[in-house]
Image 1: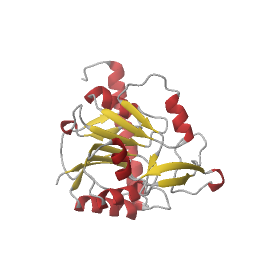
Image 2: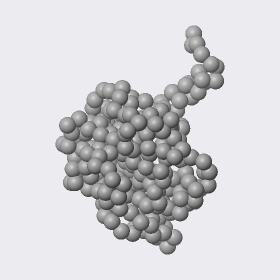
Image 3: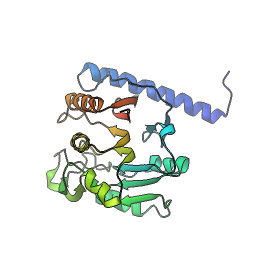
Length: 247
């Protein structure tokens, strides 16, 4: 028999069922050429942080209160960032250049002083980029890659990772999380070309989009592997990856 609080048992069962359904959908998408069946490449201690559907997996043994965390793509969800702060006492530098996200963060009232929000985004260049709104107006995430509604695109400032680190006075990043709606591929290439030291890289890949496709993710994983990054977690849906820098 299962022991413990009945509500927690029910919650665990629901998470297990949800994960199983996501894996089935992922397998079907793999067969259709819309996803990748990529498994873990190394084993390490790991924990999931954040709310359901907003969780990221990190390796806790690599973290301390002195760790430098960059979180790109806030949207309207900071449960992962706040969990990192509570668990490890880190300072999280969070970034999002889109007006709706900026307004949402400002409306949150009191947030921990360790949560530092920057009103610009990351790209593989410094300047201004046009961000197209999501197809579903109920969603918050804008994209500099998709051009589904260019008439309502908004200009917003972006910077290269090297520029941001210079601004903030950092020479390395312990955790770099990116959920940046398709722009991750260019940023990864720029990161590797500049030899930026990142210990843990958490990234949502957008190969499900027809304008991107699975080959771009395969190439990104291959390039990261060649530079010593190894996968220690892939989400059930096959989109969120966690990498550790091994060499």
